[in-house]
Length: 85
Image 1 (tube, rainbow, N blue to C red):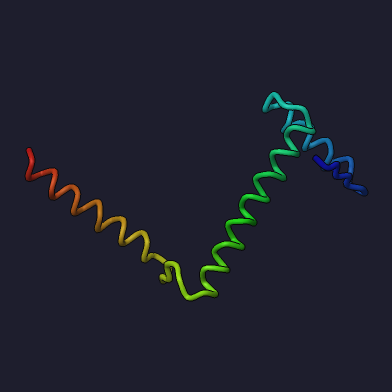
Image 2: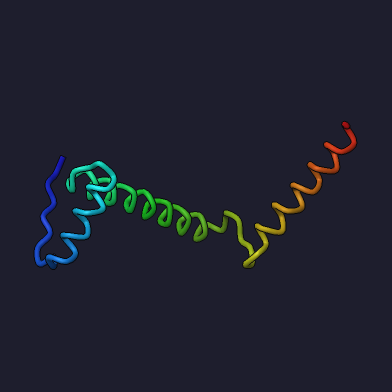
């Protein structure tokens, strides 16, 4: 494990982070570590998606396409289920 130190954080930001950590029943260290880990996971996902896109693979869609496809899949499922009744 490595240590990370962040300088020049305002007291207001520190106090807010401390309050959030406390409200979650966590120390500030645990809370901040979880924030960093979650951000790193998301960054890895973005890197992977960019890599897939650059290779010409993956799902390429316009805004709303996924929602329409999900609605179609659900409608088909509902039609099948209605026939089973």
